[in-house]
Length: 180
Image (cartoon, rainbow, N blue to C red; front, side, top):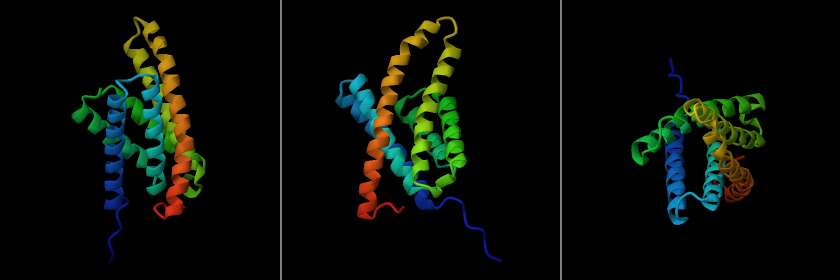
């Protein structure tokens, strides 16, 4: 009797961890190089995040990749960078929404479902983080409204990242590093 193969290969798990670390490190470096979080660095950080996430999903075409990436990313953020644990529920709900969007649009059979998943992940995470913020700031909802322009600037970087992710994948496929 043969053993059932594991769902995740070790190289896929390593790749998810490496991409989570690379995304966190690049976000930190962009913020430091840009003098902190300002509109330009916020857009650039989200552009790089989205581009790298598209490459990760193109390399690891399995359901649950976004959930695992989110868990690893949040562990790195909380333990190493002092990130807030209150962002975890919003990130997990965004990842669940993205996984569902990928599943509804046909799974990883089509290359465009990766872009749908990443767009839903970025938007879902931002919307659910606003909802968590609203729950915590019920006494002063004006504070939550003051953050909305920052969210819109960040998501515009994500939308640009969808385009740069498409271009990066095209080049990586041409180089033979990513299979269709």
